[in-house]
Image 1 (cartoon, one colour):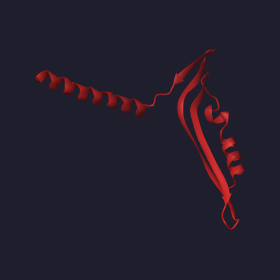
Image 2 (cartoon, helix red, strand yellow):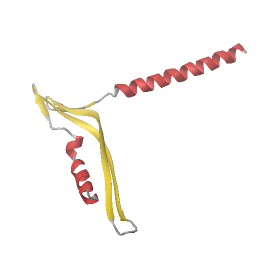
Image 3 (tube, one colour):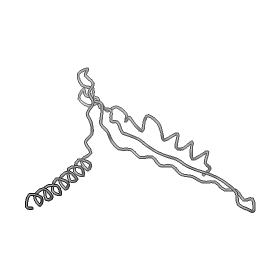
Image 4 (cartoon, one colour):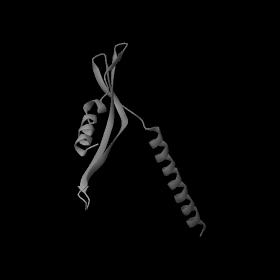
Amino acid sequence: MKVEELLAAAKDNATVKRVYAEPVERDGITVIAAAAVSGGAGGGGGHDKEGQEGSGGGYGIGAKPVGAFVLQDGQLRWQPAVDVNRVITVAGFVIAIAMILGARIARAHER
């Protein structure tokens, strides 16, 4: 795939439809999910000593849910998504630091 084709494909993938899902309506409530989308691309080309040319590249896109807009009874509200893995990781880190500090404080009082 040529670099120009690669960048065109990356551009086609970087649209607002990647950030906001199509609205879903059920029982008078409309929900529009949203995601944080990021990506990157790179490529290059060149030729060797014999004059042969070549090019290449790649791109990647990542997304994670961040929440949803909820429209109900004429009121629009934002409902954030909760990343349970991040909550557990942060809680574990805080507990570990508290245990380490608690042990140091206890040793300091023993002296």
